[in-house]
Length: 512
Image (cartoon, rainbow, N blue to C red; front, top):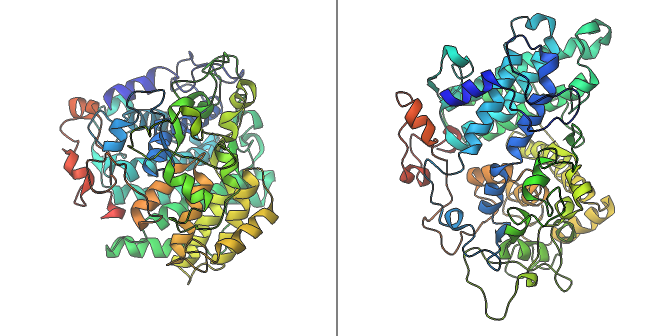
């Protein structure tokens, strides 16, 4: 933590390249930089975190991809075996805290009263990212974490306390935005300029809708918690959201991504797209991944899956076809005799586009389909506050079809077919299972970690382990990085590999 905080204090390492005239990666991030000079870079870096190693980990653990063992000797061995140690995917923690520390410098700016809307947006961005630290690690540095050199070895806060404060901060942000949305004339010189905000171009109403949607996600994650005080807080907050506005279109970010250098590409494409900026095949990313047998069968409507008999048209948009259908590798399997690399589907969608097109693609902070499925979940779990579960579910599926270049009519036909199966709204064992199945498909290309976390909470959809798995279930959490044990040893909980796979006091509080 100490090293991360010093980096955040000393250098603007938010983007690796100057994407436009507003961001210079070599400019020192000192306390004199105003929120106007920080916000765009903070947004860019926070998005890059979710487009990094968190993304690929979630795709592997939701069993939508498998390693290309035709080009690599033993791909995904650690992920398949789930050999979780203090060195496993440390970038999730390190990059998150670096980005969060920079966002906190907007939130805590000494003249914050002059930038109320920038401060509100910083609180929203921090809630969106800090939630995942709690989801993946449980207790974590928070209240002392962003004091930089004043607290280089911050204490660990309880996950439930962090969650509660994230909701409090979101409420604070919404309370600041509300008067400005109702009466834009009061904003004046305090407005967020369009070039300062790569996500909503200063549109405060859209920021409020995103804040509400993040708040709903945080509250719903706690629906299984039995602690009386947590339940009371969650229900109290949910009861106030019946008339809230939520995200109704895809939330994107694009600071000018392009193919001039690796660092200027959209980070998702840079990490997992087919080509490098120079036009070579991305052997360190795209080629490493093949479609999994499990996901191929779900999308093909294989008789062994709950989608039996229903071919999902989105599958051919998401992954490449082989002889007219999807073909996947079973996680952990050895090479079947007589097969070659091209016998299996590769990653498709925009990640299979040209260097120019793929590099310049938008980043996705949240999808419309994600918001609709979240509202469907809210109506199922808390019908006293929300309604229209099936309508939101169907709107979520329709939005997903449109996202992948299909039509609402295609979605309607698909839903009609799906209703006759165990995966549809009518035939599913419960409505959360139906929602989770669509969450898996809708978010696979951009936000698969939401599906994984909800899988841990609900057990849906049924997700097989790799053949070489060393444990009987998926990980409930990650282990704190080695750097925490060396630089913050007096505060960091001592987590063992066994703690990752059993539910105990170290499990994220909403999952115990």
